[in-house]
Length: 529
Image (cartoon, rainbow, N blue to C red; front, side):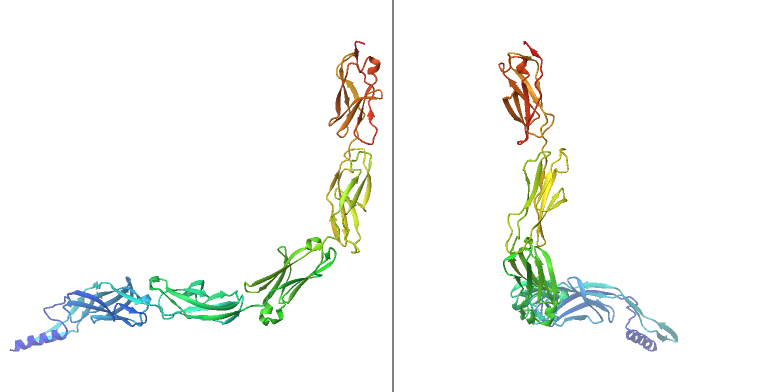
């Protein structure tokens, strides 16, 4: 009986330490089943509190086991929890559309080693020390996928930083949905027209309002990663865009009848400048332009005056443009003025129109049209080859004998009145060369009683040249040729003997007012006299 008492004591100690001698130090277990449930159900509306509950069933030989629970959404871990319990919860408080997807639960029984305190057992006078060591092997198992569908989105809140602005100014717009999870895409609409797309990370956005009036703003919201979740529309916000009264005007003084040399004032102004808020006046820029060139620009002023002494090129359209610094608002106005030429472009002429070496010729300058009653005094200048030749309207030149003299070249006339200068087109003058004294010769021998040919030739002269074959004082024929020689046919009965042959000569002329130069008599051998 005493021996049986010792055995019962040993058994009691082993049970208290959680170990039996039959178990030894080996631990065995198997994961039977892992399940995942969704409460209150897999299909809920946004804002519902949802609990995901993972339950594991393990067959084992130990008193307790440590379980590592992992909750996964689309195979990505979203929550983890260690517990000795066979059940773990993951709560979505509340659930949003971004929480939708395929969930699973993975349970891992962690590998651990645990030792009990030393237990001393005295059996039949012998003392034994007993230590129990347990090793838990690592195993894991996952539940099947369970789908959670959270329908609906929260309503985004649209706010603006100002409900009243001026055209051209920017308004900051925020579309927020703080209760939604995940990246969001917003579409901003103004009066129903799509204006801007942005994400929640880009809030707020700036929107420039360039059209006066009442503008209604709203935004549409979608989940970037789950477009199938649909969209929701924010509240409506109405803002007032006041017209910025900066429309300019363009005026001219005098309004009409401007002639070159008159003073012309062009005014670019904003009539409503004094009605603008003070800070808007300081931002106002006014530009006066013509043909794409800025004539003058001022900032913070009611008008831009621009005075000029008019010339013909000042006629045309002037554009006045207003802008607000720091914005894209522009308003324009334009007006057109005419400027009458004080005098027409001058013309240069030469008399006589054809000049020969040694001739006197006069270069003259004139204008066809001059506006009367303008107290305008025309002054003329004559230029030769770009150099000033003469102050005056007329100048007489003697063409030198050499064809390449300084009197040849281009002549230009310049007219001036009231500081307005105009040049004529250039007139090119080249003095013609007088035909030199000709020479006469026979082509081959001369046989009396038969036709023959004679040649009249000059060494120099401007073309054309008129050659005339003479017999004494009687003309046998004339030729105007673009050459320095001419051939004449002499008939058989024109020359009857050598004395008549010596009466042949020729004349050359290329000047209408000069006496032709005459050659010496023909000298040629005569056959058959």
